[in-house]
Length: 495
Image (tube, rainbow, N blue to C red):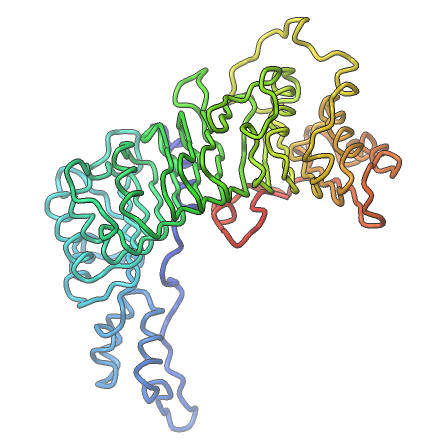
């Protein structure tokens, strides 16, 4: 694994892990009078002092007992918040310090983050069983457990005793581990009775073990697979509680909402098939509340609704091939590839209720796509193609906002914009984000799009409230994991 690959992986994962439970900048400074040196903090009630201690890095929190008799015992009486990064640097090995903290604090453990200590065959037996025993016995609620350094080697397997922590866990993020084998283990809602959020990062989780967790987590709302490389290769969702599923910078061959009555969001971002030339099957079975979906990729995704695989020129729209609940839809397409343009229009017809439509042009992306080769004359779009496109239901009667990302000014891109503007009677806002300063300037884009700003081009009947905005992407602007996973945001995509 190259240095660059490791750096990229670390950046992706660090952006996705939950934030540290305490700030490293927090410190305790007693406010004293300039005249009498009176201690103004110690007289506060215990509840307030414990609140103060809970906000300190663990080294400082444990040392508060030395301030005065008043402070003794407060750290042990405060739910533990531990981040092993705050134990460094130290002449004592970090693993030893973590073991001491976990052993000496009586619990409960509010949040524990261990992400700086390499675990391998030389120390896994000495450390993991002890740590997991303390975490389980003392009721850890929020656990982030990461093994460094990152690599593509087979990771260390976590012992099944990890599942003992499930009785108290509300959030669990695991990074660079082989998930415990669950074959033969007891099942039921008592395994993870309170777990609401699960993140599996750059590790190996067999499909059967993921199914086990889903079946044993009656309150799980968010499932995230981050930088996973084909394990599991099929993500099949059968859960009554799940509301959000994310595949983020991963490899997979299938994501299926098999039976997910409360699922509201499926996010697939920078995720590719496990084999070159393969496809990811995105299957929507029973998901009546699915409202946010994307990015569907016209090059690498095969959409299946119910038992029907959606194909341009083959699939006819009928009640069995539409998902009317989706309100926010994001699609990624290479407009220079005729087949993908046809697939784009076919996909749109499957989501008649879309109100906010995101389109990302991937014409400049050559890293993750097979070369489509020379287009056969029979496959090329005729000059009259766009004029012959029949009305798309969501565009005609539902779409209120369109965001076109990575715009480069290609003919098919402009024609698609004309199609939407000329057919969407409820359209209020169009945002065009340029691909970058080197591809097309704002002035050039504005000139090319100027005719579309004319109200004569708009079918919208929303008087006085329509707008066309053209702007460049902010420097370094990327879609953030915390936005994609935030269920309070009705539209999590870049706009």
